[in-house]
Image (cartoon, rainbow, N blue to C red; front, side, top):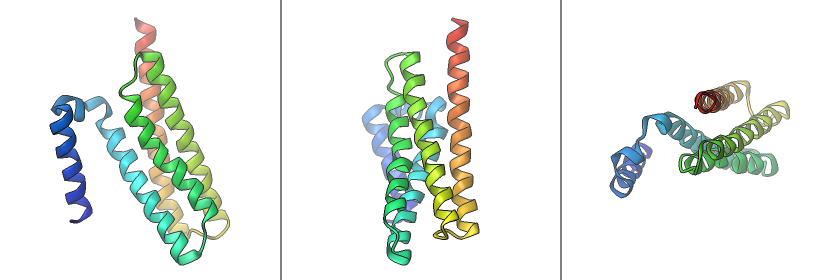
Length: 145
Protein backbone atom coordinates (compact mmCIF):
# COMPACT_ATOMS: atom_id res chain seq x y z
CA UNK A 1 0.00 0.00 0.00
CA UNK A 2 1.57 3.32 -1.06
CA UNK A 3 1.42 6.56 0.92
CA UNK A 4 -1.58 7.97 -0.97
CA UNK A 5 -3.54 4.78 -0.34
CA UNK A 6 -2.63 4.94 3.36
CA UNK A 7 -3.71 8.59 3.59
CA UNK A 8 -7.01 7.81 1.88
CA UNK A 9 -7.57 4.92 4.30
CA UNK A 10 -6.90 7.23 7.26
CA UNK A 11 -9.38 9.84 5.92
CA UNK A 12 -12.01 7.18 5.29
CA UNK A 13 -11.74 5.71 8.80
CA UNK A 14 -11.82 9.18 10.40
CA UNK A 15 -14.95 10.07 8.43
CA UNK A 16 -16.60 6.80 9.45
CA UNK A 17 -15.79 7.23 13.12
CA UNK A 18 -16.27 10.98 13.53
CA UNK A 19 -18.76 11.77 10.82
CA UNK A 20 -17.99 13.70 7.65
CA UNK A 21 -18.37 17.17 9.19
CA UNK A 22 -16.09 16.59 12.18
CA UNK A 23 -13.46 14.75 10.17
CA UNK A 24 -13.32 17.30 7.35
CA UNK A 25 -14.29 20.67 8.80
CA UNK A 26 -13.22 23.36 6.36
CA UNK A 27 -11.68 25.53 9.06
CA UNK A 28 -9.09 22.98 10.02
CA UNK A 29 -8.77 20.75 6.99
CA UNK A 30 -5.85 22.56 5.34
CA UNK A 31 -3.77 22.98 8.48
CA UNK A 32 -4.43 19.39 9.53
CA UNK A 33 -3.39 18.03 6.13
CA UNK A 34 -0.30 20.24 5.85
CA UNK A 35 0.87 19.50 9.38
CA UNK A 36 0.42 15.75 8.79
CA UNK A 37 2.35 15.97 5.50
CA UNK A 38 5.08 17.94 7.29
CA UNK A 39 5.28 15.30 10.01
CA UNK A 40 5.72 12.60 7.37
CA UNK A 41 8.55 14.59 5.77
CA UNK A 42 10.23 15.08 9.15
CA UNK A 43 10.04 11.37 9.99
CA UNK A 44 11.49 10.46 6.59
CA UNK A 45 14.22 13.09 7.00
CA UNK A 46 15.09 11.66 10.42
CA UNK A 47 15.37 8.18 8.90
CA UNK A 48 17.57 9.52 6.09
CA UNK A 49 19.86 11.47 8.42
CA UNK A 50 20.26 8.51 10.77
CA UNK A 51 20.98 6.01 8.00
CA UNK A 52 23.00 8.11 5.57
CA UNK A 53 24.66 10.79 7.69
CA UNK A 54 24.80 9.03 11.07
CA UNK A 55 23.20 12.09 12.67
CA UNK A 56 20.88 11.31 15.55
CA UNK A 57 20.61 14.17 18.04
CA UNK A 58 19.39 17.17 16.03
CA UNK A 59 17.16 15.05 13.81
CA UNK A 60 15.59 13.49 16.90
CA UNK A 61 14.81 16.96 18.24
CA UNK A 62 13.38 17.92 14.85
CA UNK A 63 11.20 14.81 14.79
CA UNK A 64 9.85 15.55 18.27
CA UNK A 65 8.95 19.13 17.39
CA UNK A 66 7.85 18.49 13.80
CA UNK A 67 5.45 15.69 14.64
CA UNK A 68 4.13 17.58 17.65
CA UNK A 69 2.75 20.36 15.44
CA UNK A 70 0.09 18.14 13.88
CA UNK A 71 -0.64 16.29 17.10
CA UNK A 72 -1.32 19.59 18.85
CA UNK A 73 -3.42 20.85 15.94
CA UNK A 74 -5.61 17.75 16.19
CA UNK A 75 -6.08 18.52 19.87
CA UNK A 76 -6.63 22.23 19.15
CA UNK A 77 -9.69 21.57 17.03
CA UNK A 78 -11.30 19.86 19.99
CA UNK A 79 -10.69 22.87 22.22
CA UNK A 80 -13.16 23.69 24.93
CA UNK A 81 -13.39 27.42 24.19
CA UNK A 82 -12.02 30.15 21.95
CA UNK A 83 -9.22 31.09 24.36
CA UNK A 84 -8.36 27.39 24.84
CA UNK A 85 -8.21 26.96 21.06
CA UNK A 86 -5.89 29.97 20.68
CA UNK A 87 -3.66 28.80 23.53
CA UNK A 88 -3.29 25.28 22.16
CA UNK A 89 -2.73 26.52 18.62
CA UNK A 90 -0.02 28.76 20.08
CA UNK A 91 1.73 25.61 21.28
CA UNK A 92 1.63 24.29 17.71
CA UNK A 93 3.16 27.55 16.53
CA UNK A 94 5.96 27.23 19.10
CA UNK A 95 6.68 23.68 17.93
CA UNK A 96 6.77 24.97 14.35
CA UNK A 97 9.32 27.59 15.37
CA UNK A 98 11.41 24.95 17.10
CA UNK A 99 11.25 22.78 13.97
CA UNK A 100 12.54 25.70 11.92
CA UNK A 101 15.44 26.10 14.34
CA UNK A 102 16.49 22.45 13.98
CA UNK A 103 16.14 22.60 10.18
CA UNK A 104 18.34 25.71 10.08
CA UNK A 105 20.91 24.12 12.40
CA UNK A 106 21.01 20.93 10.32
CA UNK A 107 21.67 23.07 7.24
CA UNK A 108 24.27 25.29 8.95
CA UNK A 109 26.19 22.24 10.17
CA UNK A 110 26.23 20.58 6.75
CA UNK A 111 23.75 17.76 7.33
CA UNK A 112 21.26 19.20 4.81
CA UNK A 113 22.10 20.34 1.31
CA UNK A 114 20.85 23.72 0.17
CA UNK A 115 18.02 22.17 -1.86
CA UNK A 116 16.98 19.87 1.01
CA UNK A 117 17.01 22.84 3.38
CA UNK A 118 15.00 25.09 1.06
CA UNK A 119 12.41 22.41 0.43
CA UNK A 120 11.60 21.48 4.02
CA UNK A 121 12.12 25.02 5.30
CA UNK A 122 9.55 26.30 2.81
CA UNK A 123 7.03 23.78 4.16
CA UNK A 124 7.76 24.80 7.77
CA UNK A 125 7.40 28.50 6.97
CA UNK A 126 4.13 27.90 5.12
CA UNK A 127 2.79 25.99 8.12
CA UNK A 128 3.93 28.82 10.39
CA UNK A 129 2.02 31.36 8.27
CA UNK A 130 -1.16 29.25 8.25
CA UNK A 131 -1.13 28.72 12.02
CA UNK A 132 -0.40 32.40 12.65
CA UNK A 133 -3.27 33.40 10.36
CA UNK A 134 -5.70 31.06 12.13
CA UNK A 135 -4.69 32.44 15.53
CA UNK A 136 -5.07 36.06 14.40
CA UNK A 137 -8.44 35.38 12.76
CA UNK A 138 -9.73 33.58 15.86
CA UNK A 139 -8.57 36.42 18.13
CA UNK A 140 -10.27 38.99 15.87
CA UNK A 141 -13.49 36.96 15.88
CA UNK A 142 -13.39 36.62 19.67
CA UNK A 143 -12.86 40.38 20.06
CA UNK A 144 -16.00 41.08 18.00
CA UNK A 145 -18.21 39.10 20.37
